[in-house]
Length: 280
Image (cartoon, rainbow, N blue to C red; front, side, top):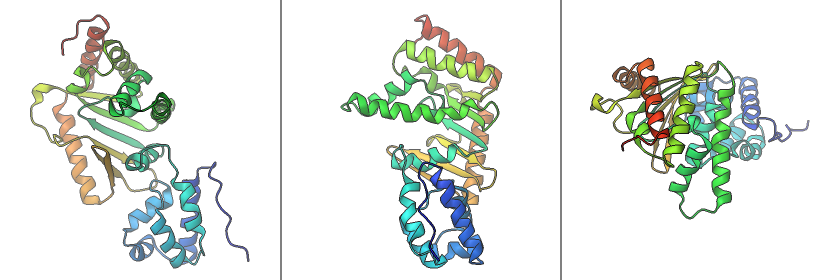
C-alpha cells in the first residue's frame, strides 16, 4: 500500500499536517498524553500541533514517524509546514494569531503590530535595521500588515489591548505618523472592532513592568501566552503559567483607564500630534 503523499504547502500546510497527525494518533490507539510521553512534551502540546497552533519541529517529526509507523511522512512534510515570513522567534506566535478566538495584549513601548500603519511599521523596522536595503524593509512591512488582515472579520477574534501611555508619547516616525496610527486605533475602537485601554504614567508600578504580554485562546486547543524580549520570544502553554499571566493581564487592565477615558486620551493625543502641539 502506498504511503501518504506530501502535503501541498499552498493549502494551509500546518493545518493539514495537524489533521494528519490526529488521524495517525487515533489510528494507533493513542491519547494525546500517550503520544506526548516519547516526545517529552505534554498532551496539550500534542493537541496544539494537531490544531495547527504549534508547528511540528523536525526532531518531533522524526520521533512521530517512529512512534506512529508513518515511515518518513512527518519528517518530509514538517519543513513545508514550518515555512514562515516572520522571524523565527515570532513565527509560531504570528501564525497562532490567525487561528485565535481571542487575543489580549499588553504593550509597554510600541503600538502593537496588529494595529500599526504602514508608516509606523516602516519607522520601527528602519530603527531596528539601520543598514537594511529598502526591499528588506518592504518585505517586513508587508508581512506585518498582512497579520492585520484578521481585523477584516467584524467579530473574530476578540481583540483587547492595554497600551502604556509611553506608546502614545513616543514619537515613532514623526508627528504625522503618530497622528495617523493613533487615529487608526481610535477608528477601530469606535466601530467596536477592538477594546483598548491606556495605562497612564500616574498608575505607577504595575504587574507587568518586566515587559509585554500576549494571551491567546482557541476554539479547539489550549490557550497560549507569548512573552517577547530583545530579538527573542517564547510561547508558553503550561496551565499554571497561563493562569499567572492571565492574572497579570487582569491586574494591568484594572490599573488602566476605562475604555471610554482611554479612547478620549488617544484621540486627544492624536489631535495634538496633528496640530503640532504634542510635548514629548
